Image (tube, rainbow, N blue to C red; front, top):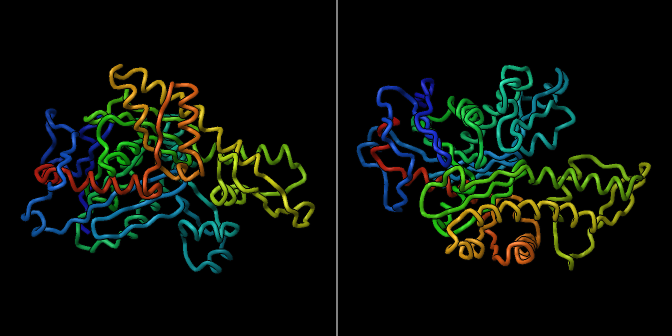
Length: 396
């Protein structure tokens, strides 16, 4: 692969999109705009493709799960986990120096496991006190390898250029975005850092008069769409996501069933299988050990309460985005809310948010996106394809 990203510099850092320039030969001027041409017919010119093939990739680099959608038709999704053998015995047993995704979960007792993203950003990239620490360096290394693994999954030809749009939390800081670019630069030739909820909306061609909610493991991101690139006041990032549900569920089960033994992975597995906020849901019964004896435990109430815990802060954030918008269009926003991300798969969640909006915001309609896991990656891929040809030439 021809890699030019050793000289990658951030050239335009808007609130919706950050563009990384892989070289300094053709720097973007101050007048350059991060606005994406949304014309579906826009494609790079033939001269670019004859010089060197390009593979476009949309990547949702999430705290819990990474998903890619590629111009060559490849689509993959896997847990955002990296694992290294603990010692020479585990290295001999596993036959490799690093594992990813589901393999990490399956072999976790033999591994030092890294979940390098926290709240949607690379651990250790939030503040100056963390940068350069052993933990921050280890997570950056794991993040690099996670991105490399995602790019390998794309099966891009060895001689092709890789142009990638990566989703990040709506309010990711400049340090966070630089850290993501640093993780990507070894295997990607040109990068755009894009707001996750914006990419979800873009993938559905919902570019105006809508509110988008993207529920991930580390964060829930909200974005107000009104026909332009979102600005800072159009976006909100909450720290209420799937991880908070896991924590609340574990606390409730420990409180109501103190005799039961369980692990964090057991909590995650049972949430992913049975998560619901519906009052009419079937009983959720798990068989977990009590003093080593497999015992049936009904956790229906605990599951509903834990899953519902993210609803009030989401509606509160929705209310603030609606209240600060044009009064004539506030009702339009309230009644056009899109729910995406892995957390949107909680049974009955869209209805629960709508009902809570009825009680606290005077009404609202929420609908789930068609592909919760790939919604962000699909939109990121469309953004990469819709970038004007002359813009890609500046980056090449």
